[in-house]
Length: 72
View 1 (cartoon, rainbow, N blue to C red):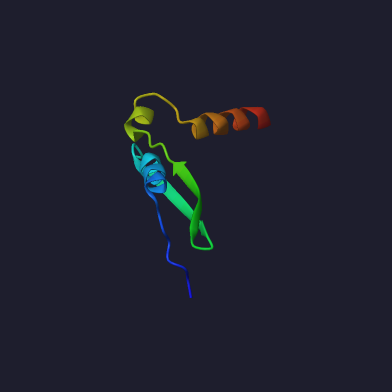
View 2: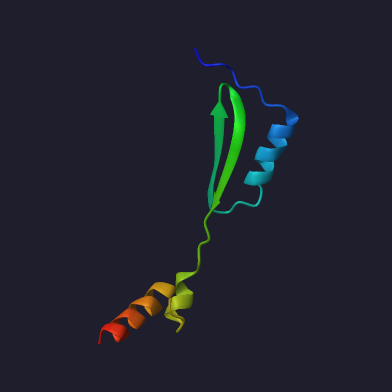
């Protein structure tokens, strides 16, 4: 049977710190033997698609054009 997880205030504060300010992404909490041992934060940045339409090229478009030019 799984052990109940006991979180003290220090771990709750650590988790809250990782979640605060996160607009897009995830927080992964790793538990070993009923104890929190690690917190991973993955943050995503989203950019406005309209900026690309107004003359700014996306990095993928620039890379594709450079590759095309290099291959003739």
